[in-house]
Image 1: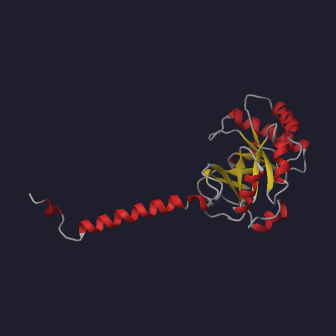
Image 2: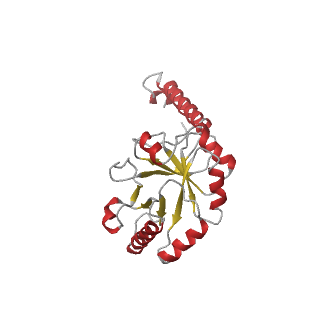
Image 3: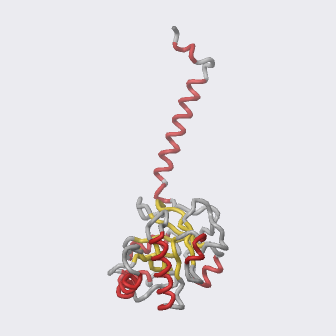
Amino acid sequence: MDQTRHFHHQATLPAILILLLATIGLLFYGIYHYADQTTLPSGAAQSSIGVLLEEASASKLKQLQKSGISFVYLKATGDTEAEVKLVKQTKLAYGIMVNVDSQTSASQQVAKVEKQVKSFGRLPILLDTGQSDLDASGLTRLSEMAKLLQAKMPKQEVMVNASRSYAGLMPKGIKFLATSQKAPSRLKYCFWQYTSKGHVAATGFSHYTMYAYLGTNQQYKQKYGQLTQ
């Protein structure tokens, strides 16, 4: 059987080939320009976005600022104070993220953080258990640590990575971090972790955990500092 009979129109095969080549071309174009793009949130203020840093360096902080990042979260470790000094040399606002261990007492963990960190920045202290679905022990520890930090640092905001539906279990005044795929309510959440696999222009292909402030740009400036774009 003549194989050309499979195509009812002479233009069908060329059209398919052209479409295939165009698709491949767009793919290569996207890969080539990936390093020039920053993963932005959908439905939130794009000027006030930030990242979680595993470790901070002067060059990386400058790249982040140049790429329009406005704030960074630093993990509470023995190196945090050195990293804070580097951040203070930039226009970036900063905050401290504390990994919460549900198996260790709240008082022990807070005491450890106080030894590691002296300057907590203007952003809320972020308490994060690393659990996608919080269990009873995780919720209890978040609540206990939030209450202790509020008592020790009454002028410092504290935020928990937890659903606003758990507000009744948390101390009054606690902020909440949303992790939903869609933009959350600005009335219920303070910040939004909109991706854990984000990219920031000119910083390579690292996967960043990225945040967006859910208020207006003016509110951000009043509470946390200047924007970088």
